[in-house]
Image (tube, rainbow, N blue to C red; front, side, top):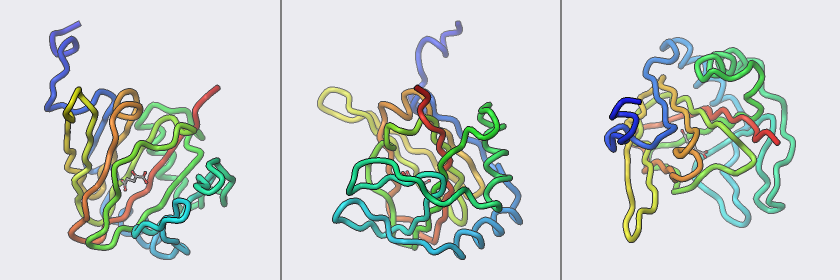
Length: 189
Ligand SMILES: O=C(O)CCC(=O)C(=O)O
């Protein structure tokens, strides 16, 4: 093992975080944005609360009132080619992505600190439309370890390992409309 393997470079960010720019072509980005904009998006509901981002879930959705996963509409055909591309990049078996979340953030909208639900395993996210600061934090004694990923439009990130299980993530209010497609695999028993 090299020294880099022994001593994680803090500038490299959380272990288990992968990122790549230009994952899709600009024309594909426009098609995907069009697909998301045409969905019957709903303000994100968590129990009695409502977030400002607008979402549509496919495959499964998390019901915050019942605190469990519920079945949702199948992953739309127009998302499947990019879902297959995401699986190939991540080294996942075709069909591993079982949940897709399409999200629209208007300017001034973000997402607060959270970790994704434990029912899911790997989390991958495609950024569309405008850049965002994808922030990570992890408790370290009395303070927080922090890392910010500048997620460009058409880029893909993956959270696995510590990035997924130990670090929380959030996005501060975006400056221009941003869309994302989140691809999630299910925890295997
Ligand atoms: O928009 C994104 O890329 C992140 C979405 C997210 O973290 C979530 O919906 O849990």
